[in-house]
Length: 136
Image (cartoon, helix red, strand yellow):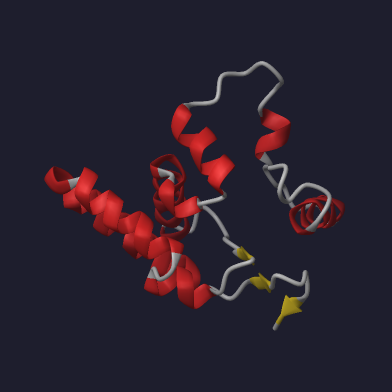
């Protein structure tokens, strides 16, 4: 998205491609004029990954594919600590309180999202702090 273009994700995208690693980046797949659903627009505007059920569904699917060994996953934590993702604190806590309210009849879905976030946060990846420095 616009908030990460020409920074961490852009550099990572190009470095992976130079090494022959197939990558996907939404901004190249979404052409100008393509309809973007209201959920995704809201998540982009608020920069709140955890508030987007679309993103959480996608993450849960990625974790399923990872478990089947169909995908290798290398998380990049951009301006967030893995512990915040794993423990769902801060913005994640607020988002999940809303999800629990909205999905009272389908708490399995919310639990699936929580587990997926926890599993992704447990994978070694890159952490980029707010000062744009990698944390090892």
